[in-house]
Image 1 (cartoon, rainbow, N blue to C red):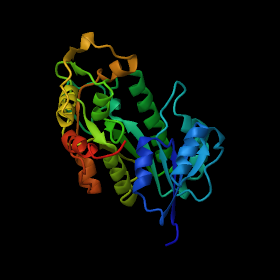
Image 2: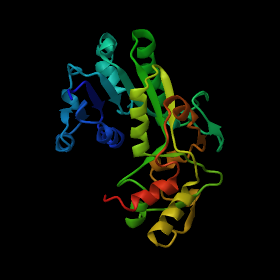
Image 3: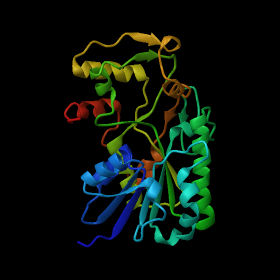
Image 4: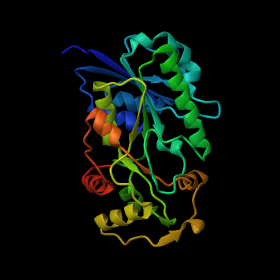
Length: 287
């Protein structure tokens, strides 16, 4: 079968790698970018094309699909700064464009449910940057016709990046903050939702990417300890926890994220609908 489609992943991280693993190489050419030579080598070791991000002066010829997971910085979205004009000029080249954002754009809702129509009221600097980045990508869609799809990701876990690994490394903490609720998503379900969107594009649409069962973070740690047969770590009050500023900022938001849209519009069925199913599966995965 001839290669018909070419995916360019700007920022070949955890989620992009999971998507690449699910795509049929007989139908896809896949190119990933990295900021380091070591990162380029890792992409090439997967049998994929790789480019140093700082040497990417233009979108390669033949790219039909584009996924950006590059986070915004102090100056905004790096991809829009360096490639925005070219993207606007080449919109007809693309069949699908995806931008990976975060549910942090919703801010704090004291544990209440949010959906894609909930107003964006971030209360962290990272959240404000993401709102601005989303707006920049949406502007390309509205003004230039870029076939954009925005995916707001909940807390990501998967092989090598989960509560089981934290416990085995002795780094897990059961931090208690009254009323704190987080939504999560297994990286394979992120990839599955991206694939479903590629096959059923709906330009300009925004999708929440979260599983069915938000839960307090301490419950996840306790369940992981049970699976491993390890003692449940003692509880620590949030005020007393030793956390980095980045880790502490995650506790600024408490909300439950609805996923009805990916089910209704993309027909997606979650492989890991909650953290219990996801963590059980990870017991058998080599890391």
